[in-house]
Image 1 (cartoon, one colour):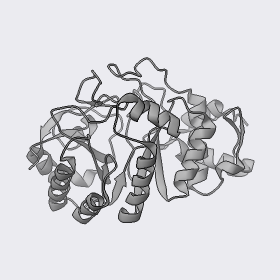
Image 2 (tube, helix red, strand yellow):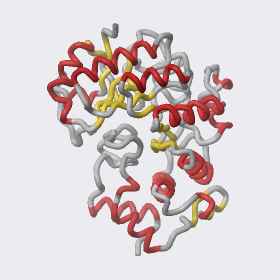
Image 3 (spheres, helix red, strand yellow):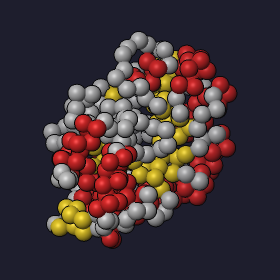
Image 4 (cartoon, one colour):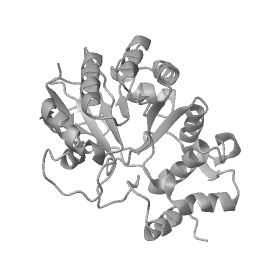
Length: 325
């Protein structure tokens, strides 16, 4: 039986587990399986990786303190209605699926919110077990936009058990068995805009939801000195993703020059309406998730807005995109 779980700092504040002030409250409650050792994987950007020397309570730039699971369950029962979704993320370790099943079953006893699980590739019977326990959506993070980058950052080249093909097959299996599957894509690992957008299209065509993250350097990881992605480039990818997932354009309709997106493949009217609504630049991924400041400090610059951008912010976004008319 699970005794401890990690709780994202903002989630814990909303749940009343600890005190603090939030500029923007999370709309999804985020939890991370607790394991006293390191993850079996070795993703080069991740504080949880087996060769990382980062603070083990961190994931991306967010602190996830350890908490008694019974206390968390009591808090969910009391404050669960303050969220739209629950997301349980998993470190890769032996018997993690057993822990996930225990977590899900106990959460379902006190809460009817949709539950996402973000984990490593699983066998079909394990996915079926999670779905039967009440999981609404399975997430398996590709992170890298190409197979070559994947192998260099998450796969065999860095002494990690993952492979691109295994992840793709696992996502397709999760979509088939769970009905809904999500993956994370990290912008800024060395891909071109064209590579990222074509991968988003590839996933969309298979019914897999893509969530965009901006690469975040974390002390103690091998990629700690890597720069963050260019904000203008990130905005172009965000906008392209929005057009693709809403079937307003396709990657093959877009125009690229040396890997850089130069034409979105839609009319100015469609483009201006998409930009003006602000949605392309908000947190993407599972429904009901705003993931405040997971990639960035509240001081900015903001990559993924946790709420609809203001008129002033939209003006700045248009300037970043080069749309000043």
